[in-house]
Length: 329
Image (cartoon, rainbow, N blue to C red):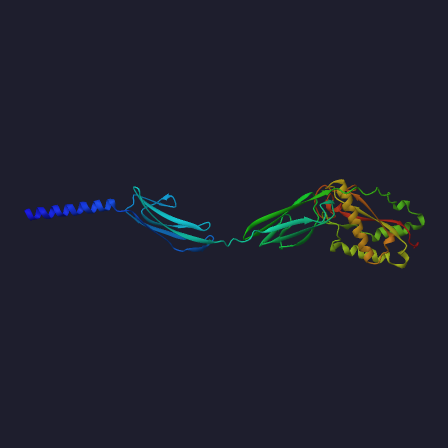
């Protein structure tokens, strides 16, 4: 009995001594990182282990006594674990070096040859970029990294170029101001067939039978393929020996949409396009006069095919008026 009592007493003393030693033992700390050097944006695992600590912090943030976490250091960073017990503490740290591999930021510059134009005129956009992968221009679309493009805005327009690259994006803008052109001078009223000299009235009648109106697409002044045959027939007739002295006028007309100034300009371009086509077929340009009536003679009320009564397509045309010349049949 006495021996067992002594053994129990000794065990109690050992346990108490161990507890007292543990209470007095200083804290310890150990910290490791998975990699000491990474590229920008790559993750790193930080692990720590402490003993005899009541409070543990990692770079000032309270954490468990043993643990780990994955981090993405924004730049070269020192990670430090601190284990505290009363006034005693233990520290251990490790540094992770971050190599910056950030791509250079793109640049873009957009300019226009002319920033003030009249409606119907053109200007040329020019742009240059660096460090870009995709370049777009509003109203134009995707373009190459540098270049130029001719544009003809109908209204004042701000063009913005955007360059996208690994290093971010950049923009540049230029504004093109569009004004209405001055109205063309009032043209002399063309003479009617009845006003032509009686000796040439038969020539005028022949001219009317050969001449056919030329029709245009909306807002266009180029000669459609479907209308070119009419002008070739007229050119062949005009280039006959008996008809080479005939002088005539080309009238440009528009549908009623658009401003009066715009329609006068469009009608003028249509009449000029017809004249240029006839000249290319051998008709002497001195025999051709041009005039624009804009929408003054428009009768249409809605969109439709040419030849249908009330269609705007009938208003988008060039007419031919005999003036003088030609031998009497």
